[in-house]
Image 1 (cartoon, helix red, strand yellow):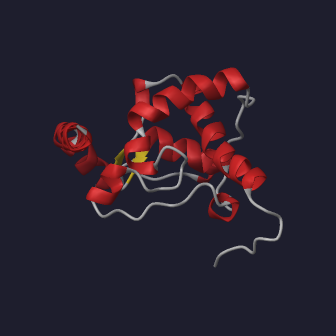
Image 2 (cartoon, rainbow, N blue to C red):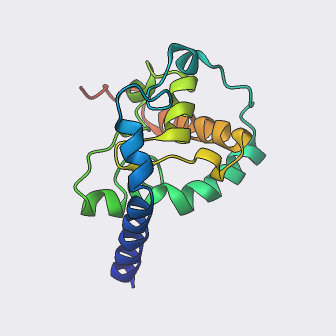
Length: 154
């Protein structure tokens, strides 16, 4: 059954890739205004406070749309990522995102990056900001679970 789900997930992701091949091509074009993150995008502050309700809402969407690659806990070890031989960041490690602004995360979630499609207009802006809160929460949760004597990995 799990193998069937992985194959189905890969098929759906491939279908999304085929249907979005043209927009991805235009994103790669030189001079395209929408293809690059601007300093203004990166400087955006998250206007949505992290709440248990907001995290619960977005965690459900994360389970449907993101966990197959980014892993249920944000470890970057989802089944589809493994099948595609992708090396994704482990968001449970606070060092992974310490230099990434909320605006940068929001832009990536909205527009996509590499093989990852963006949420774009599929989700409301508030929901995409809650995705930023969720990504940040993975490191906070893991930090609370780690023993204090553990040294950071390089």
